[in-house]
Image 1 (cartoon, rainbow, N blue to C red):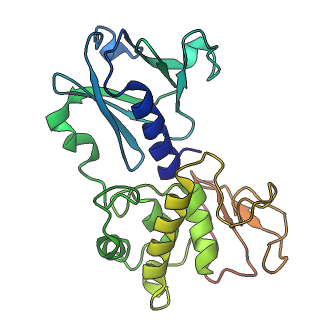
Image 2 (image 1 turned 180 degrees about the vertical axis):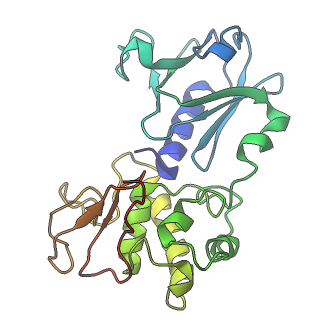
Length: 268
């Protein structure tokens, strides 16, 4: 699942493959961009911003993409077989003489003036992996609405940019509270520790796709709770529970994590 660490690494690989080179092929397979052609332009850089990717090309243009749940960018050498999915899932192709970057299942793909990037990323809070990272501001934003459940506050990219559902569940576990505990009920010092832990976890995972939060090198102990329903908690042995009644599934340990459980969906 693409989160801030995955996006950061994707941007790094795209930048290494494309930046400083002329595009020999540009194929943007969304209706509104069908006639756009970036061929002949130099790629200046590829920059991550939270979960957003900004591919800047000469002439003051930026190709903006977002991976959301299952989008991806793959980089291939000449003659290498494309393995990211079937052809009908391809949304973008950017090629130089040395590499081809292929975007699969991209739910968001826009071409805009670089000077207008604020229209797509200006709402974001401090970027956990960006040069603008400001822990104090992130804490202030997370705590701005005391009645808001912690999980919602962490996922809100206007508070801090880069956290997705995996890190939401893992951070709540590490804080020993459920994702439904109102932010205002967090014990003193916990918001600051949560934000610091979020920054640390994304930073140590940004160099790899094999995401880990436990610190263990064992292949069966990558995450504490996410995706581990029915399995015993590593701390107390209580079976991990999950709730999938809302848009994003939540995992938690009822033995270790204090706070309310999920509310029933009134529409179900």
